[in-house]
Every structure is written in C-alpha cells, then in structure tokens.
Amino acid sequence: MSHRSQVQTQIKSLDILKKAIKELGLSYYEGQELSGAYTRGWEASEKAADLVIEVEGRKDVGFKLGADGFYSLIGDFYGLRGGEKSLKDRILQMYNVTFVKDAISNSSSYGITSYTTNTLANGDIVLEGEVDTDQIVAA
Image (cartoon, rainbow, N blue to C red):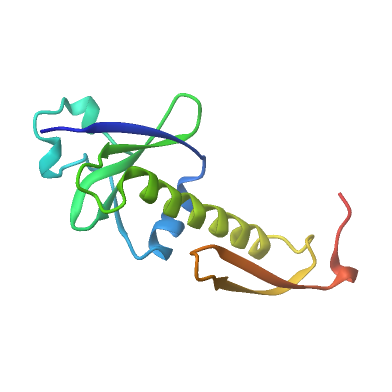
C-alpha cells in the first residue's frame, strides 16, 4: 500500500542539504529514483528525486527540486518512526545550523572568530560564538 506524500520546505541549497544529511548520520544518493518497497507501482515521474536519503534502511524518501526553486521532501513515510514531520523537522533544523556554520566559515564580515555547537536536552541546537568587534564589517 502506498502513502505518497510531498512536503514543501524552504531548502534551496543542495550542497548545504547534503552536509546537513551527513551531520544527521544519514546516507544520501544522487541520480537515483526512490526505490523502497513502498514505491512499487509508482510512475517513474513520481519516483524521480534529486537526492534520495536512506532512513532506517529505507530508500523511499528524498528531495525533489520544484519550479519555485525550493526542494520538497517526497516519498512514503508510512511506518517511519516519527513520521514525515519528525524527519522534516530534524533535517530543517540541521539544514539551518549547517547554513549558519557555512556562512560563518565563508565570511569574515561577521567578526565571529570561533563557535561551539551545543545540543540541548529538548533537541534544540544552540550555536555560541566568540565575536571580535574589530572584525565586523558594516553592511
């Protein structure tokens, strides 16, 4: 039985998405279709994904670029621990953290000289940084 879903996200950067997926300890595959057991009977266009992620040993979840320039989370989330919302929230959280870390690493204009990442008991991720105010570049 198929439970096909598409969840819109605000993800635009495939490179940041790949880094975030790795940070979560998940594997990803490019140039493949969704191939899990739940996708049997789907049309080829429904299985097409820009990035397939392996979650709990399944390969029937992935990301597909939309005409609006954002990636949607697609697949069959039936039986997935926590469902699509939990997976989406974990990926989006790590995507945002990775986006900020990448921006800090690639720009000296923020004046951030170092930072640490802390995960709180509730799962929130906090970035704490050291700022050298002499290095901040005004916008």
